[in-house]
Amino acid sequence: MEQQLQTQRRTYDSEVESLRGELQNVKEENNRQQQLLAQNLQLPPEARIEASLQHEITRLTNENLDLMEQLEKQDRTIRKLKKQLKIYSKRIGEMGAGQTEGQTSPGQMVEEPIHPVNIPRREKDFQGMLEYKKEDEMKLVKNLILELKPRGVAVNLIPGLPAYILFMCLRHADYVNDDQKVRTLLTSTINSIKKILKKRGDDFETVSFWLANTCRFLHCLKQYSGDEAFMKHNTSRQNEHCLSNFDLAEYRQVISDLAIQIYQQLVKCMENILQPMIGV
Image (cartoon, rainbow, N blue to C red):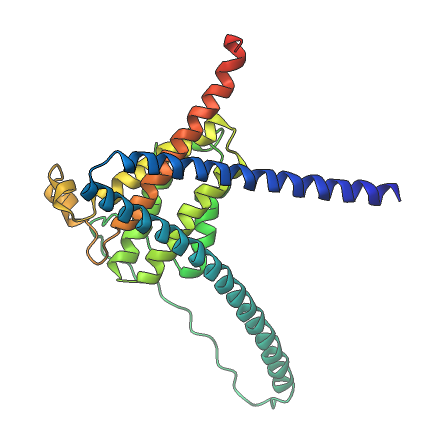
């Protein structure tokens, strides 16, 4: 009886904590909307309209990202069920093959398998792209974002390495003109960064690490976007690596907003660390 009460209490505490987190997020969003409205009221009429349109585009893009995440979860469930079906079909086929082997006559020849021969590849110039399978996307995001520890692991990596790897994967998806891979990779990246910051938003090292990587990822999206405004300092070789099939301006805006939110979160972390030291 006592164990049941403890379990129910833990469940209740967890639900209360979750509701508090959601309430805090709503308050922050409300404050952000009020600040944005106050800023817009100070602008001239034409600039006010443009700012309102840009804000609406960003809002719709964020809603689209949430819907894409839900769709992605459904796709993962479907793929999981398909894999299970394939495993069961394979087992049934093996059972049937075992029965057939038992009926083979002694004089019947058994074909030996042909061993594949390794064919060496010619060396090519590095294209700055990484190819990955669609079903490995969540594994990629999991290792690069959700389970990457800033202390002990990331500290030994090249600065900005997760951002560079994600961008190289994005470049390959653009190169093969796969709009679905581009959308899902960007959606998974943005949502995973939000998830890890929501989980460890009070950890200074985690927040600062993802602020640096988010800014680096945004810089890559700008530098290799193909827009002349961002290409003027590129070398000819760098311009060859620009995205060729997709305009990601809306995603750049979303990632820019995310970087601002992470910066604000980093300031809060610094305040929480410094306030006890100065006795405020």
